[in-house]
Length: 335
Image 1 (cartoon, rainbow, N blue to C red):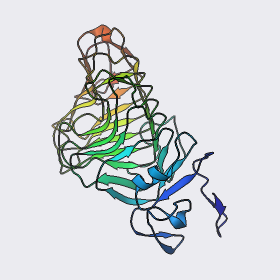
Image 2 (cartoon, rainbow, N blue to C red):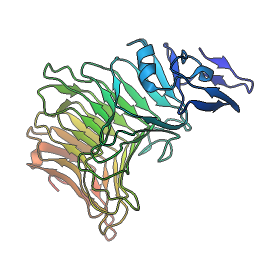
Image 3 (cartoon, helix red, strand yellow):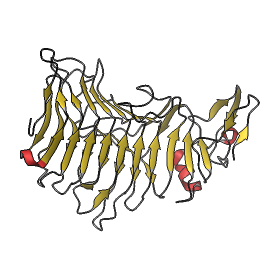
Image 4 (tube, one colour):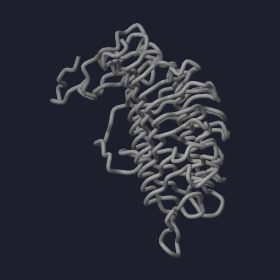
């Protein structure tokens, strides 16, 4: 339940929901309005003053498909095992500190949101959305895949074709800045199974690979390993800030993926020497004509725009590779 504070503001009013809001604290001791409270999984979690200690307990307490929200209070949340999202229709969010701006590129907030979450089980998945668990939303979180092979958000598919469908990931920041690994991903859709994930939307997100002391040679910010139908990546930034090349910012491995739209995205390099994104969109597995669309994207100088088996597999429109000499080159076909 929302209630008015002594300052005249409202707790529990974001996001607007017909369900309940379960509050999760970053540590056992946390502070709200200058007062210290104790978080516990024995609390009901229904007030910021009675916060739960773990996201897993919030999932247990929540009800599927009624609009329940799990709100992670600002601070550094650390989990010791993968968080398994086992109920449909849940929202996982931090507190926003900016307005949502879908006309912008990259996160609508800063490059690092105030609510951070990482996994001490290095090389493991942070959030797994189970097969058949639909309509999950993630927002205003700073997600830190830990160790070589760590994954921020993993959407499971299954042989029965019951994927984690209609997942909505927006206004999140992904920092792949821990131990480098080519199987470290920001968002991973599926495995090499016969199932599929349908209608995933990733919007207003910032993906960073490496930093000034860490190699950027990770796996893709977004990768479709299993079949994905209707994946859209919009208004997002992919930045290599590491000390070595980042092979692929977006990668599609499954030949069955179709209807993939990448629009209004920026691909940024920290230098034009070694810290390059080798290929912005790597889609050599795309076999169907026009299965991937790339509209109105900007690619940094030194980076290939698209790699595919055939020009007809990728549809390009109003996308450009930057150049310090001529201002930009239009992308046509296989670049």
